[in-house]
Length: 238
Length: 173
Image (tube, rainbow over the protein chains, first blue to last red):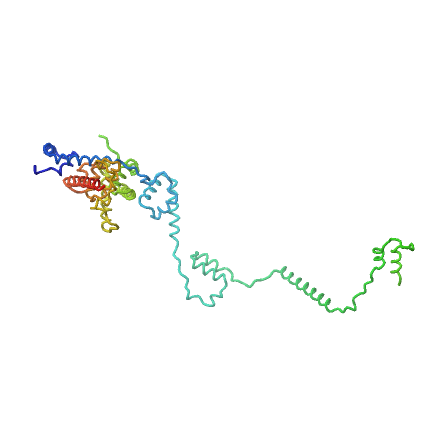
């Protein structure tokens, strides 16, 4: 037997041959040991492949729509989520009015931020020594202009009266005068204390009688007179 | 005659997730690539649901999965990053455990997967669609855009090559 229907054996196994093709193969198999072995091998291979069974993924294949996206919503808004996660957020938003509102609010905030005007850089060649000595308020106003403050606000600030020198109140002036007078008095007294001669200092008379009566012994002496009486008599001498 | 409803995207992921993951794993040979393949497939499913006409859902999903897989294989071939083990089955087959029949051993699943990984993609896809996804030749032909005769030939040759690789691995052990 020179011809073998090898290419048809798998299709025969899979039931993919026409009736006529199947008859031809069956007739051949009946008389060909080699093709029967081949058929057995292919059948075993097919059974093994089918027997591998189903696998279970260990992690979710889709983001869970039940979970609120939270921070992912901003990333979704910015197109920074991977496409599948983005679809998960969309699925959640369709079913969750709170998250839909939050997304809308985030979108508005982002639009407001993105709508801010571009700033003009300050003109450096316009800065002169005179401009540097300008009052602080003028510099501040200039800064506000450069920072995009509304021009009408700047104009209203500009129409206020110009800056004047600082003035003190009447009470402040009175305090200053009193302080000056007190300082002058202190200086004069000090000057007099330093320059007065020692001779005119008043003479101090000690109270010898009181001292003797306080400190002398009141015990009687052998002659019967107390120490105190003796001391008082002594100090009473002229 | 009852009219079949078009499933939602979430329904498909829930009810056919295991099927998709299994087909993806058999095609890619590792879990990370399988997850990537499933996710890309689900994206295409989401885009294509509007045009889906109720019929063989698993056939439709298998078609998308294999097309995504073949697209990624073509893309990798355009920018190869590592040497492919293709054509050298000994280098990818794990050591056999000396069972009398190769495809009856306890490690058969790993052996067969390693042999599948070593098959050229066109044969691997045909065999996986037939023996893992359980699709008829006509549907595989439609999915791959090749005649039914080509599908028949690829499946036969694919099984034959697998068997040879497994037998060779057995002899080397």
